[in-house]
Amino acid sequence: GAVVSQHPSWVICKSGTSVKIECRSLDFQATTMFWYRQFPKQSLMLMATSNEGSKATYEQGVEKDKFLINHASLTLSTLTVTSAHPEDSSFYICSAPTGKSTDTQYFGPGTRLTVL
Amino acid sequence: GQQVMQIPQYQHVQEGEDFTTYCNSSTTLSNIQWYKQRPGGHPVFLIQLVKSGEVKKQKRLTFQFGEAKKNSSLHITATQTTDVGTYFCAGPNSGGSNYKLTFGKGTLLTVNP
Image 1 (tube, rainbow over the protein chains, first blue to last red):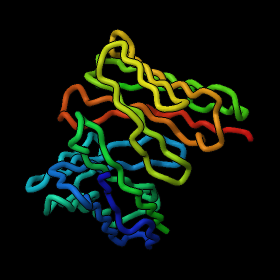
Image 2: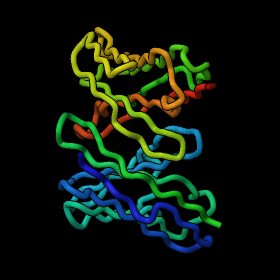
Image 3: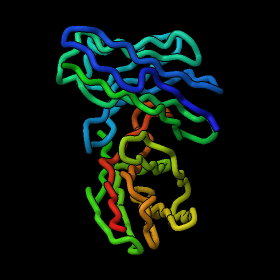
Image 4: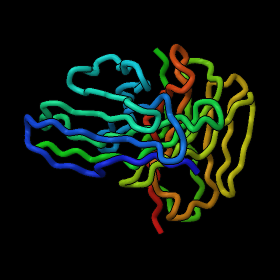
């Protein structure tokens, strides 16, 4: 089956630094990918829709200058958390539509970000 | 905006007992999907229901889609410790792209062996 990978799987950084997270579709092309964040014991909160070759679409309340998204190819989307602060610590998960049936998605394994 | 509500938030059962989680949408859905997330893991697609009144089974799991296509349920018969995790329902966003999903808050199932 299709696989979505994420790198890194976890990262610890100092406050004020920027962190880049990669999301790759390994055996299929994805013109659209989604970025979610999940706090402990909470649901998935959609942050933005990443569109290949065009600007990402951000959900209400998500700062686009804080969470930079680049979808440069049909298999890669990146999320950069700029000037990270402790409140940005979270589990970031990407997903891509399977293309097999309407709307179903493959999720990446997630990236756990801890900002000190 | 569209809301997807799920109850209960938590459920603890003894191994062998049954478990049910319920999902309700504020709008009619074209389909509903269920995902499972193991502790420390990521969501994994379980099933998609499309038709009004549809019932699908996967071994001990039974999924139902309501007649009005606004509610759904997941029932697990005779739970096992491998069933532990959070079960999310999700429906396509009514106002946006075909692929955008709105997730319920999930039901965390714990099983006492």
